[in-house]
Image (cartoon, rainbow, N blue to C red; front, top):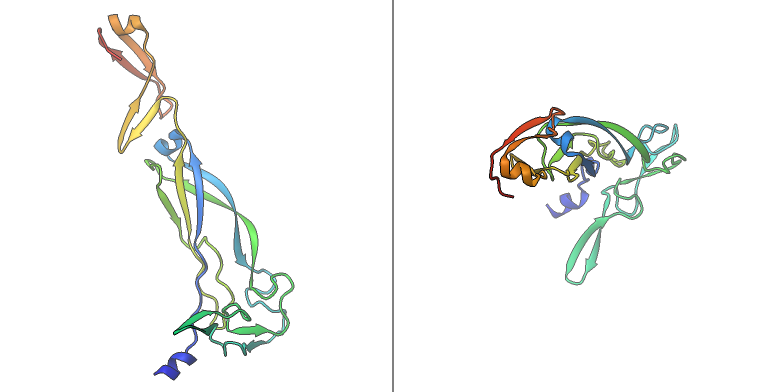
Length: 205
């Protein structure tokens, strides 16, 4: 069984997940919105289509790890497995690597995405875009799936409106006359419609 484990080759690697922090206004959180974002992320190389080599280049089994993508190192009484430094975990060495991605099968590139912000999001809300993370690294067993993109929402403070869970609070200045005698004031609504509020006489701060 030990020999079978040493000869076993790791499956296709999945691309890494990516985190993006986005600041939005209070109105966008209330009404929902669409936003364009730009992020630098590893994508599949257009020139080699992720193979890591020039046309006709052959992939040879890495001699350092025997195609496993992992090497074992003795650390005192323990044996530690680490990513092979020669093939970087792919298990193969490209005879004639692609000059654009240098054999990695992917390149760093700025990418634009349109993100739909649903109504009612709160500070710290996480939006997941499946498959929009990093492209998988080149692997001897073929490419894996791309990672996911996680967008974390951060709300900008509003001069009037505050939120506590699902409850909205509006803090507005009130003149002494309106507080003492009562009256009616207008508050700018989050839906761009003014809200009329009746102030009873004798209102305290």
